[in-house]
Length: 86
Image (tube, rainbow, N blue to C red; front, top):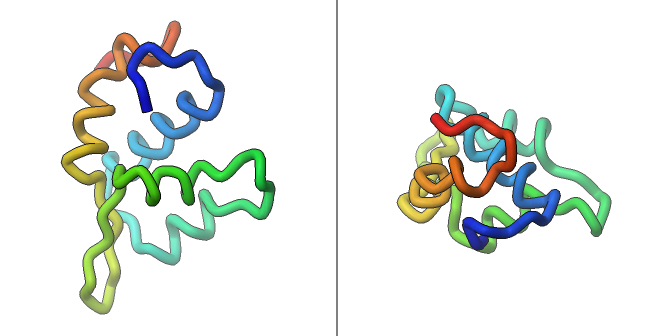
């Protein structure tokens, strides 16, 4: 995901990363909240494919923002027009 992109899906990806970063979420909770069957709105799947999210292998399967996802969050001031910068 490029920091200068104006794709609406990028704004949703930032929202997903911010949501995950707010507090620990289980894998089941994240899927329930973010997974969709709409092929044009695959925010969760795309974030996983891009390596923006990590999931603990333990029983609770806690979802976290990956190092790559943190870099995206760090650049969000320029990525989200009119959005939050920190």
